[in-house]
Structures are given as structure tokens and as C-alpha cells.
Length: 126
Image (tube, rainbow, N blue to C red; front, side, top):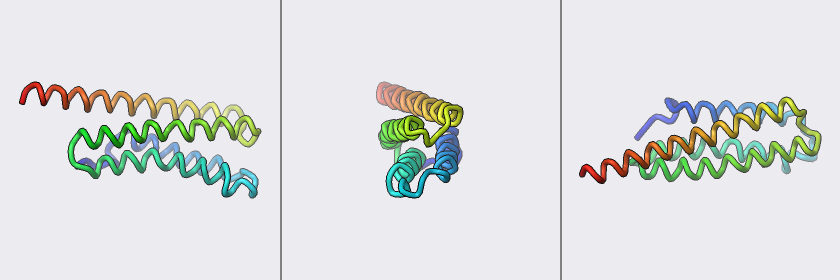
């Protein structure tokens, strides 16, 4: 079992979630249960899945939850694009948040590959 708070990818995804919450504060009230809620929930699902994976036993389970987190990261990526296209997010803010999502997805992919390589090596050795 690992501490999710020690993982750089968790810290980065948590920061993104906080930034999405901040960015959606000014969204129209009628979007509270629409784009605002969906954007916030989708952003929060990324660090939540990382945390859940860290609470499981073994690298294989962690890798599975990191894969889920990676897939989940595509959801806020889309919600941010939609908010930008609806003129709810200005271009500089959108671009910053979108870059963060893409970086998190890259970090998750790299972490998953590392865990799987370690697992493959352990099986070959054992």
C-alpha cells in the first residue's frame, strides 16, 4: 500500500481539480448541475482513482486504477474544451488547464508502463 499524497501525479491532478473548481466559480448559475458539476466531478475523479489504486494491494491493481484515472482524465479535457467553446473559459485559462490535463495523462501513462515493466521483470525473475 502506498501513500497517494507522495505521488507527483496525484499532487498535480489534485491541483488541477482545485483549478477547475476555481475556474468554474464564475460559470452561470444554470450550469451548476450541468457543465460546472460535470467538470468538477470529472476532474476530481482523476486524483480519486489514483488514491483508490494506492489503497489496493500490489502494483497490478495500482496500474489498473491508474489506467482508469487516465481514461477519466479525458473527461475534464473535453469539459474544458466545451467550456472554452461556449465562451465560459477564456483562451489563456483554457490552454493552461488543457496543458495540465495532457501532462497528467502523460505522467499516468509513464507510471503505468513502469509498473507493468516491473511486474513483467518480477515474473521473469520469479
